[in-house]
Each structure stands twice: as C-alpha cells, then as structure tokens.
Image (cartoon, rainbow, N blue to C red; front, side, top):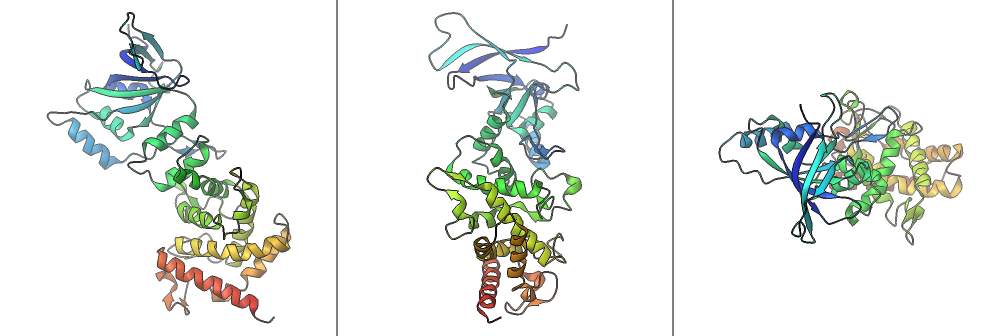
Length: 380
C-alpha cells in the first residue's frame, strides 16, 4: 500500500514561534511530488496570483547537465512554503534539542491524485526544482528549508527577500510589491506606492492605460496590446512623488501614509487628456509612436508636474472641468509634438530616433516644459 505522505528526519529551527521552520532532505524525484511553482498571473477579476517568474530554459538546462554529469555536489537547497497539514514529532531524550534546533520527524502529505494540487509551493529554487524533476539521478538527496504558512503575502515577502542578491526582473518586483504589507527594505519600500498606482492604472476601467501596461503577469495573448513598459511609468510617478512633483503634497511624511486615491485621480485625468490630445499616437507600439515609448512616457510625466499643478488649483480633480482644463493646457504644446512622424526641429532629430536614454529624456522633457511655459506667458 502506498503511503499518502513522505516521512523524513528533520530539524525544527527555533526561530519564529508563529511560523515553524524545518530543515530536511528530499530525493530529487520527490520535490516535484510535493512542491509546485506559483506562477505570477491575474485571474479574470484582475486579482494577482502567485509570484514566480517564467521558466528560464537555458538556466534549467545548465543545471540539468551538471546533475547528470559526474561527481555531483549539489548544496544549493530549496525553500518551500509548507501547508499547515504537515506534522512534526520531536525525538525523545535529553539530547533532542540544543535550544536552537530540535531533531525529529516531519510528515508531508502527498496529493490524492496526479491532478490534485501539490501541498507545498517553491519560494526559492524554481529553476533548480525543474532540473531536479528531470534528472536521471532521481534519488539524489536535496537540502530543503521549509516554513509553514499558507498566507500568500508571507510567501511573497520571503520570495522578494531571498532574491535580492540575484536581482529579480524589475517588472516582477514592481507587480508584487503592492501585495506585500510587511516592513520592506528602504529601496523596495520607496517603489511600493508607484507600483501600486501603476497596477491600478492597468486594471481600472476608467484609466487610459487600462490593459496597455506590460507587466510580469501579462498573458502572452495580450502582450502585443500592452505597449507601455511598467518601469517607465513607475519611474515617472516616482519623480512626481519627489518634493517638486505634483503628487508630493498627497504624501503625509509625519505618519508615512498617502492619499493614493487622489494621486490616482490626478494620473487618470492627466493621461486621459494626453490620450485625447494625441489620439493618433495613443495605444500604438513604441516603434510606431514615441508617445508610448519610454522617452515619451518619462518626458510627458515631467510635464505633468507643471500642468497638473496648475489644474488642481483651479478645478476639482474629480470633475469634468479638470479634464477640460488639462486639455486646454496640453493644447499649448500639441503643435510642437512629433510622436509618429516628421522631425523635432528644436532638437534636430527625427521622431523615431528618440531613445529611452537619460540624455534624450532630459532633452525632450526640457523642450516640452520650456514650450509649455513660454506659451503660457505669451499674450493671448
């Protein structure tokens, strides 16, 4: 009779009383039986699922080639999120613990069938686990550290932390950050609000960017429609959250909170007006429209601070008047813009030679802001 669990000798590490932590070994073939990969995606309602990046086939092949070679030493362990259904029984005797760890036996439940969900999720070691599932050394012992939690937020938090040495793709980190509510390192914490605003702009039906932002979870069938890179928009929002930006007043520095709803409204009003001012350039691929290119998003983002600073002083941001006023302000620069054809005469450069580089972003930003301010000062 086949047992419905795997039993292994294990150490229970006395680290966090609320989250049991175990160290044990599994055979290479057993990893795939107990652990699954939580791929990042979104459901039909737009809720974020999982946290793992796609498989890196070349990386997996390199690991597999090593595992199938001679003289294998594989100390690189896996980190698993274990279900609450695991059982640990400490060994008897006076030497079963040294105050740091307790020796005993862990039992990990197995799926009831081949189609049933596996009980554990891989937090770190996805590429290694895929290679282990395919190696001819199916009985190779593999070191595993497993912590018991079924809370996705804790799993995502640990996933982000263990991947700081070998950086994760920016878009994957950006999409996961708003889902993590634990204390984050300063650098990640600063990116959390801009990332949350970009997520909202991509998901909300009233946003001009709805479905247009390319994120880690963007399905393959929709990637051609997602023409704006999330990192460009995040960077634009980060700049607007600086002391000179229009979003800065909605941050409460004394308690660390922010009026994200008003920030979102300002972004929706401004970029809706950008869309309506340049309809021929909106929603196209960056190769056909530099407005949707990183250089266009970043430069128009800097112009937003000047335009919306004026709009919010004369109109209720939630009213239709705010959109109309923003359109009036953008009309001042419209004749000078060349997003899809022609040349930027002031820059002496064809429209499609603008690149997402600091120099071009700075040059185009300066032109747009200077043109806007000069037009505002000109007599009617």
